[in-house]
Image 1 (cartoon, rainbow, N blue to C red):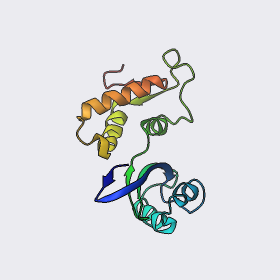
Image 2 (tube, rainbow, N blue to C red):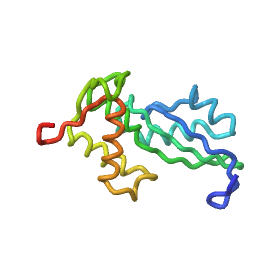
Image 3 (cartoon, one colour):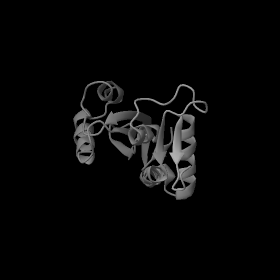
Image 4 (tube, one colour):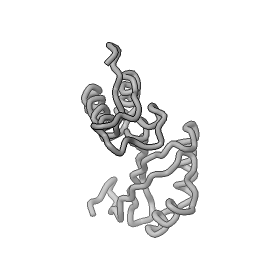
Length: 152
């Protein structure tokens, strides 16, 4: 694997962890312990960085484990589908997307989600309107209508 920050990389690990809920138990413990990561250091730092969020918010973590046991990690906001389900008040999307709409969200909801997603490291240089278009596509694929200000 390629070296990053001058150190040889052992593995890149991707996890979904509830905000403020990292503990050295599954799924965090086995995933990181196998690569000799200091679990308590990760859990303490992650929980401190996500303390201001609601505990049920699923945070995407991309952790780079180095061969010397050190690590770096990036936090990403929850998935677009999670935000859309929250905005629409749904447990899950439609089983027949395109044929059956199960809820609706406003254009303002789409804009707010796009602003949050633009803060993710991999989306920082994508124009806001492109991110919003992508979110509207995800909404359609989930059977969620987007209500614009003109009544449609």
